[in-house]
Length: 154
Image (cartoon, rainbow, N blue to C red):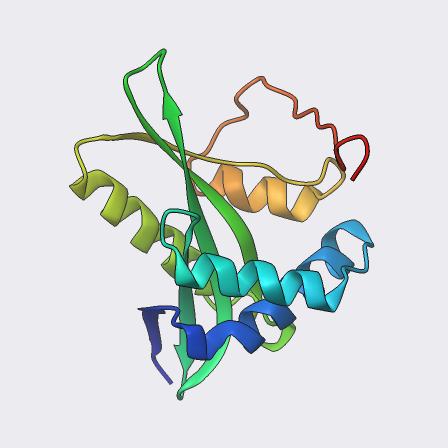
């Protein structure tokens, strides 16, 4: 069966939230609060400025997803697109789903003269993901991510 890509709609909120929870569980060993994830997905689907999900489907069934968010670089006077919330259902892995989602994102980025690069972050110990991203031509940027979460008092 061929793979089709499409932009997620509010009707896809449940599968996107399910995939996000599975991603956190599988890649980081974290259990996310279902109500919070569902609300976050609905917020993104209602406001493309927060991010855009692309879904991959086979036979009408969603088998993978990728979210793009946006960061303005004043140093480079352009947009970086951040690849986030990448998930491919276990039974669809090694079948070109991520490759298709990533190629679609790169084609859209290349078509937008304001986009200067694509970035992503991953869990440190995820050797399989590291190898996949390198095989796609990505290089380690030399940055480490720090966070303060949750904010004090929240």
